[in-house]
Amino acid sequence: MSHTEGSSSSAGSEASHVSLDRIGEALENLYISRSRQAPVNYIKFWLLLKYKGLEYGGERVKVDTNNVEEEAKEVIGVDHISEYLDEDDRPFYDPFTSQALKNDISRWFWQSNTKKFLTNDVTTADPRSWLSFTQDDDGFYVSCQEEYYEHLGQGQDGFAYDDDSRVSIPLIDFMAWYFRYETFSEELSYSQLRGRFKERFNLDETELSLMFDESDTDMSGFYSTDFDEYELARMVAERSDSSASDLSDMEPEPVFSEDKQDVIIKSTMDTTYDLFDPDIDPTEDAVEAITEDGERNLLFVGPPGTGKTRKAFDISNDIGVKRFFFQFHQSYSYEDFVESYEPVVEDGTIEFDEVEKGFRKACRYAQDDADDDEYVFVILDEINRANVSEVFGELFSLIEYREEIEEMDVDQQLMYSDDQLIVPNNLVIIGTMNNLDKSTEEMEFALRRRFSEIEVPPSTGELRNILDKQEGHDWDPEELDELALLLNMVNDEGEYPLGHTYFKDTKGLDELLKTYRRRIRPSIKQYFGEYQEEQLELVDDLFQQAARMELSDVS
Image (tube, rainbow, N blue to C red; front, side, top):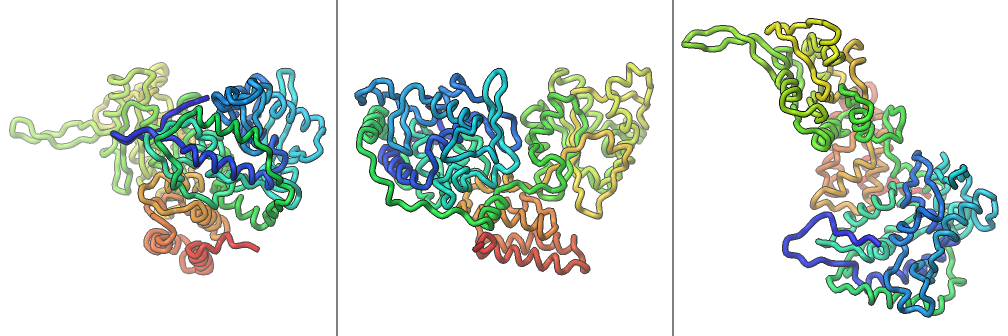
């Protein structure tokens, strides 16, 4: 059982836990919600798959009885519960059925369920249309199929009660149960706790929306500084020994309509703007390119407002020892970037001398002051706002061949100093490029081919992360869903690649139209011009509907 501390601290505050009263309420609500689920073993089966790393577009997850013990303890283990039961080998507890479970739990709802799906030995649900089950010499494996989201939580095969119902786990209650042993140095908000839960279970927004109910976000009475794990064990034992209430008269909730299902998926899927592989996170792709593939020249490409410069800064902070930043613009030149010939005053007379500029200083730092295995970053912001060929000059060859140029016996001298510049292998160049603004310069192919390109598209996931971390925001989950749906629809139906960072200072839905009017609409109007007024009107209407929470209103 992991007992971890909250990520943020509050000086002088007393550590808190989820209150026992709130855990008891959660167990009651989770038990009642069973009427909306399929066989609950399958729900726990899916949760453990997620805990083990199952994700859409990801690698297969190995399933056996030996690789789930710690995960089972984390999700349903209860310390000391056996001390309050007649049988002393039941250390687990199922919150959906109010049953204490034995030590061999991993076998009968982890491996056994996988075997059932492999052999088609199922009578209540068959998720093989959206989950893939395979068997190799070393065990069973599960992965997501293409239709994963279309089935998750929907109908009997999607782990719901029957074809006319849907899975609907109350999220705040399941979080109260899951964080039962967590120690918090400060009381997290619903949004912060949700983010931590989402990360622990490797959940994306689509999965959260399809499997969990977020109608209740009230955190009053959620925390307490008075916590006794023996009291928790006693409470759970008493619940498991009591007779289960009758669920036969409970009507399962109706299944989402196809339109509603489409809205949920569309409002939670990341927008993909001209992206070859939408399953690759740009930051992860860039770090892998640098640390594993030896790439040293990267180009972050995307429309305005997608966080290209921020990603470059974050990467340089995470894996670099120093960063040199250059803002390119139309007047930027070789003499600003590499070196120049400038007048200097010596002994009262003016003479001309070579002056070393930022890029040469970055190269010298990487070569002399950093170890060979330490990355020094050069960030070229809005690289295509300048005439890059003029700015780079002989760097065309130097950034490609780097230290190899010495081995090639090439004496390539700089323009003013006649020095030979060596670009060290530990110097990483990241350029950011706006591919939407028509006023920017085109980078010629000879230079562009020397960079590995990372596309940075608008992203609903990034949008949610930005607003969740924003202090003083007033976005509830339904409003965030509406905003994410708006971002997708502007990109799709509005045919405008709207970046997610345009919304970063918008505190709530009541500020949406003000943000649109002042920061977004002028750019969209310029982009469409006078010949695409109908597209601008369409985007206007999408923002109006979102401000009234009408985008997701489907029958």
